[in-house]
Length: 198
Image (tube, rainbow, N blue to C red; front, side, top):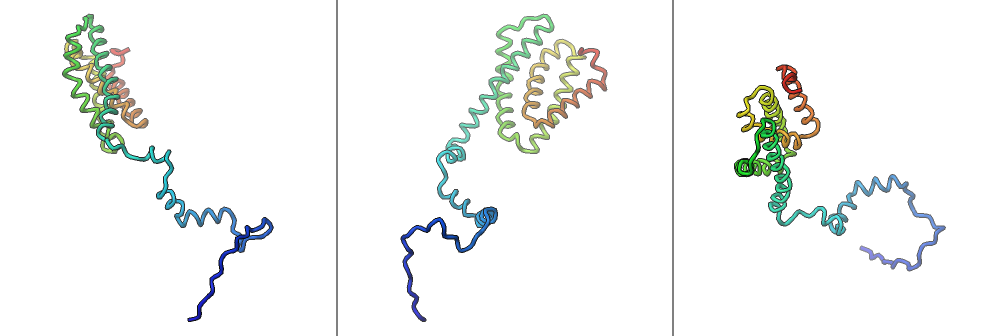
């Protein structure tokens, strides 16, 4: 087999008047680059610092989920207490701090567990279906109780129902949330409850 002589590349820089051997349009160059996957290989090997921080998973994912959940628990526990005060005010009673603490101690942990498990899986389709059904059932029950329930039943059931209804509606996708509100509105119209509510 004959031996080929290798030549060293010239150290001269090409002048601006020399044309490339093959001219390829810019669109064709990008198509070839994308098909070859060269850019993906380069980005996988050396990611920039800004994207590395955004894409790196946290070393403590459970801690992040607990902190995220606590950011949701605080406002919804506040809503629970506000609904408790409002229902007492509606029936001419005064909510004592003992009643508020009792409501928070009994409803807070359950609400916290509910928010923790629902919020971490809210993108799941089955969870969205569950939240839609929950929103429809709880919304219609709440409206029916406000219109037709006795004051004692309303004082016990309306604050947690209102809190769950608001949370389920907030966690739903927009289309599902609007549909669940339409179901509740249709229930009010079907049962003729608007004369008791407005």
